[in-house]
Image 1 (cartoon, rainbow, N blue to C red):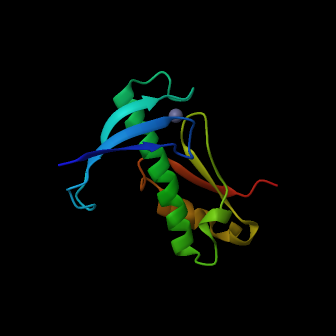
Image 2: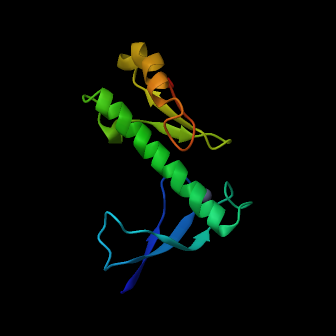
Length: 125
Ligand SMILES: [Zn+2]
C-alpha cells in the first residue's frame, strides 16, 4: 500500500485541499482521506473535516448540475455555462437565453437532486 497525496484547488471557492489515497485500490472503490484544508473566507469558520466535506459537496453539486444541463441540452458545452455560488453556498447556474423556456423543467429536475441546492436562472445580461 502506497499512500499518495493530491493537492486540489476547487473552482468553487478559494480553499486548497490535500487528501491522501491508496494507489493499490482500484479507482472505483478508492476513498480519499482528508489531510489538510487551507480554508478560504467562505469556509474559515468550519473545522478541517467539515470544510473538506462542504468543499467537496459544493464542487460536486456544481459539476453534476452542469452535467445534468448538458445531458438535457446536448448543444450546450460545459465550459460555456456560467455559474456562481451564493453567500449561502447554494449554486446558481445560468441558462442561456435560448433555453429560457426550459428553466422550470430544469429546476424541477434539479430539485433535491444534489448535495447542495441548485437553481437554474436566466442568463444575466
Ligand atoms: Zn473554501
